[in-house]
Image 1 (cartoon, rainbow, N blue to C red):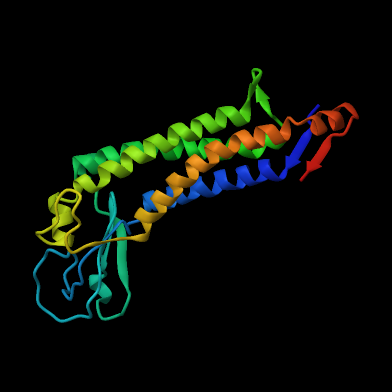
Image 2 (image 1 turned 120 degrees about the vertical axis):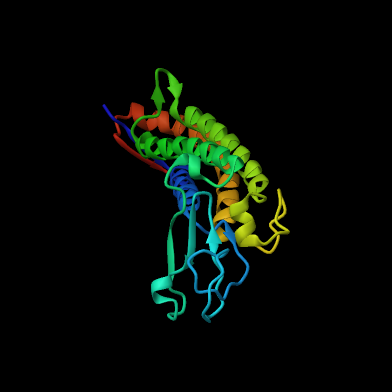
Length: 228
């Protein structure tokens, strides 16, 4: 019989796990990792020289995607064209960014798996006599390590030709040149910090759902147990 156990700490851990997974996924898919220097060119790519005048705009560059001024509607303000610049994994601009993509993808996959499993922890608290909270917490810690590795390697690719085209010739490894860091990079960092917080908080969720009060209510035959 399934005993549905809901506590404040377990619910908070579940919500944080879901939020972290979505935040990292959205950041990974975004093109707003680097915000390029202001451009007033009408061409599609920031490093292409073409005639015509247009309002200055800031192209953005992600791990595998970019946003540029849409050449078809270049006179419409804030109209941009976003999408992947790399049609295959090998076309990602830098070997460091390829490694970043791998580490982030593995970390995000683990986080999404934990987020899915966390929804069922209200009904299932153990698997093969192992606490599901402890197992998920361990997986979140491992995912956090993958995310850290990806974020450390990412700035090493700022010297690649693609990044130089957006950030100027002063751009090099760990020096963004004329670029500034976009919200996606900060979101990835924040998500990584929250990942480790979730890993630690999973232990508190385990304590809350295995407390003596919970066991007493289970013995009383209650199937729905809600505790603060």
